[in-house]
Length: 89
Image (cartoon, rainbow, N blue to C red; front, side):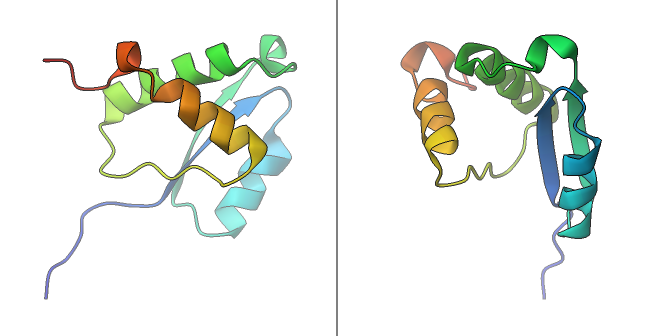
């Protein structure tokens, strides 16, 4: 039997996000990376993509799951642009 060393991590960006952090922990997140700042009160896909790429480069996750929502689809599409590849040749 293989033992995996990874854990379930959630990412929360926004302003006054404590309730979301508690919700993710209640649903099984073992760790939550939080960026809580007044400048994030209004959603901006470019800012969120920058933050996600910064975290992904720092922590090198094995897998990244994005919700199949309008927000998730927009974020994933913006993240997948060739100029934003996580692993550069």
